Length: 451
Image (cartoon, rainbow, N blue to C red):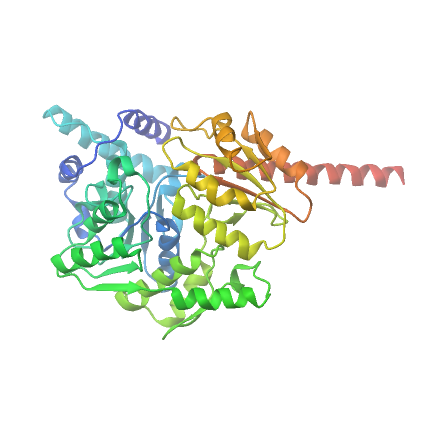
């Protein structure tokens, strides 16, 4: 298959839906010689922060000279960003070659009467196959959802298990309590495997401690409370915190950490990553400091306009909304903020709205391009319970234009919610800027001719 044919195959598989469990991925990897068993995997689970923690780890490991494969989902800006080697998306040629082999393996399975693997199983198998062939020293492997029954969890002996912040999300599949969700995340803990977790809410922490004991797995708890105290102290002193390099803290034995990703919540994500790099992987302090500072990951409190006033963030559940709210208070004190919001219907958007809307000057709602999207009109109706200036827009383009028109020059526009519409927002902002720049050039040429 060429790239176009491989993408068509993947889209077709994606229509079959989702099935939790490991049997199908185990059958598929058996067809592919179980190459995943040759990989040194750092397995990452959690509700929020997996992508950011992975970005920090990737950056530091690359700086230390390692060949690093990274598997993350979902794709937000480009289809091939799901699979990265040494910080770069895989090539269309590598994708096509790997998918061709996987399609053949799937055909052999179905010929024997076995179920066809799901799209996440196919994409996970592709990650294993590509990272094995690229001879990666480390593989950063994110769970898609949960942990115990996630397709990535066929890994038997990871180098390290990493558990980011646990909160309420995907309750339909993972359970309706923090304890049940934590138990699913704890499924990535394997016998004797080092585990590093951010300090969790009490109920979740107790679940992780018990799981680690059962597996005789050494557990390290990254507690960012002192780091947060340093960041808040700087903010309360009235110091400028608009730059990522100015949100920093001291990590014992490593030195000053200035995360390359913006957002107050990156304090805990970077702290967790430093703990993994320092205590589990034993990287030199200078590689850790510089790697954390050089990390980049789009869609996380990312400024997408040249003037820095247009920001996008993938906060899509209650816990993420609370952290985004705190970031807004630190970064944009006394600045007028306009919201663009688009969510999926199966998320707890009511709680997100209740948390976030007190900081908004005005709100525009949109319908994300996703089959599970909540219509912008329905979201606007809900938002109106918490705010007096809410407008449902007929398109994402309309929302971007209206937000730009009605937000003062020193204000901020924040688009958040479902990741599925942020790529379009980013592209629209860039198009508007290029259009204005082109108009300015044309006007300047006309002025010079008139002169």
